Amino acid sequence: MNYSLLLCLPLVFLFISPGNADQASDKKKESDNVYAPLIDQGLEVVEFDVDVDGRQVPAVIASPSKEKIHSDPLLLLTIGGANTHLLPPNDLPAKYFLERGHRAVSLSVPSVASSLGTFGEMAAEGPDPTLEFIEEAQAVIDYCIVQGWAKPDRIVVTGISRYAYMAFRLMAADERLNIGGGFAPVTDWRDLSEIEPMKDKPEIIDLRLSKFADDLSGKKIYMAIGNHDDRVGTLSCCQFFLDLNTANEKKGLSRSLVDFFVTPDLGHRCGDEWYERGMEILLNTAQQQD
Image (cartoon, rainbow, N blue to C red; front, top):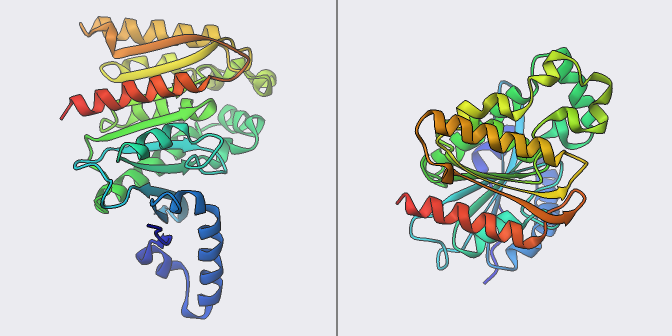
C-alpha cells in the first residue's frame, strides 16, 4: 500500500499564505517525487520545519506503516548534509532501522555541507559553529517528542564522516542521547586538508572529540574506520577511542561501552558490513534498555 507524503500542517500554515497555495502544491509534488522510493515501500514521510530563534530548520521523518511499525518504536536521528540521509547513497543506518519497524529522521547541517574550509574559518573566528547545530538538533528532537514520534530514552543518533563528528558532539551535549554511532568519523579537524591554514589555532585544536570524552563517558558508542583513512585520520580516531576508554575507566565503567573497529577498507569509506554490524549493535543496545 502506498502512502502520500504528509506535510506538517501547523508549520506549513505558519509560512504559506492562502495566496501561495499553488506554490505549496508544487512543493508537495516535488517532495513526493523525491521520496517516491520510500513511499513505494509503504513508508509514511513527513517534511517539517522547526523554528529556532527565527531560523527555519528543515527535517524529514520516515515511519513504517501502522501494520509494520514496532510496538514501541525507536527513533534514529541520522545527521547529514544538504541531502537527506533517508535516501541513497548514505541511507544504510536509516534503512536498517526502518526495515525493523523503527522511525528515522534526517537532519542537515548546512554549515559543513558544502565547504569545510568555511566551517574551519567560522570555528577559528568563534564561536564554535557546532553549538548552533546542537541547538537546532535539540529543537528537532523536542519537536519529534511532542509529535509522539520519539521518547527521550529511545533515540539513537548516527552520522558519517564530518556528520559523525556532529553526532558525537550532540551526544556529548544532550543527556537524552546515550546511544550513537559514527562511520569513518572526523575526530580531529586538524587532519582535514581544508583546515591546514588554521590548524594551529586554539579554537580548531579545541574541536577535537577527545576534549568531550568525559561528556561521552557512560554512553554506548560504535565507531568504524578504514585502517588507511588519510582523509579524516585513522590514528586520531584511535586516540579518541583510547580517550573514551580512559574516561569510562575513571568512572569505573566497562570498556564494552565502546565498540571500535579498524576495518580493511582502503581510503575514506566503510564497507556495508560495518554499517550492518554497527546498526545491529546500536539497535540491540537500545532494545535491551526496555
